[in-house]
Image: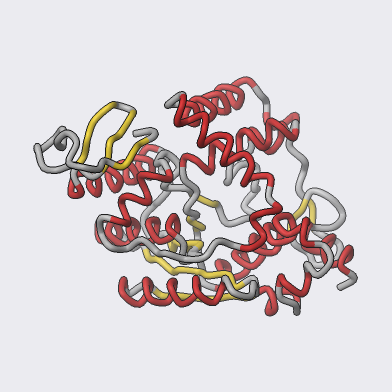
Length: 312
């Protein structure tokens, strides 16, 4: 568990079987060969699902599938666990934001993986949702890219999941993502978001979101895919240069390298804070958007507020 480093030059041996290792795990300190790395990652994902009761019999799980490494690992792992679950089914949902030179490649990758795994695949676009692609919406306001994209992606995924009859939405958020979110919400002084969970206080208004990879580090996921020749070599979203998360990611990566366990400690701190905070005191009561009828905390939902600000 925890942070890890690729092993090169035949250093050490797999702690379990003595075979040549492909990775060094730092928490606890050990080496793993390809076979035991795959077993370890899939076993920890299953443990997260079981301990947190993320999947129940007859669930229909909509997997948010961008075609990138995290969502690819998530879909592969869930497809392998599927036979052991009673009546559970999967559908992969890809959101096409309409980003030139980027999204077409990831959609092709997503189509290839779902076809190989035999998983139903649905694609929904921003153009379908709001009548414009992201590039057009962001003309002259590129610094707002992540906020605009995040709002519309959540809406598009929710709409597609409802249409697919999903009871859960699974996302590929990993340990690094979770630690970054903790730090970002702390830097913003956003206590409600800091202690919020994906299915808390939904009052059955939203499809619950689950994160089976939340305890697995990004490097572990990359190595898991690489040893199976499943790693997708894809371009980076051109709008990431405007994101606060990019700066936080770089900072945390450096701290984790120097002080192993930093990211896991951040998440432990969040969970300790959750226990001390009465979420009812900081949560906002849900109502219906006066424009579209979707559940929200104010008079307008985020999508309708965005439409208004964009003149749509």
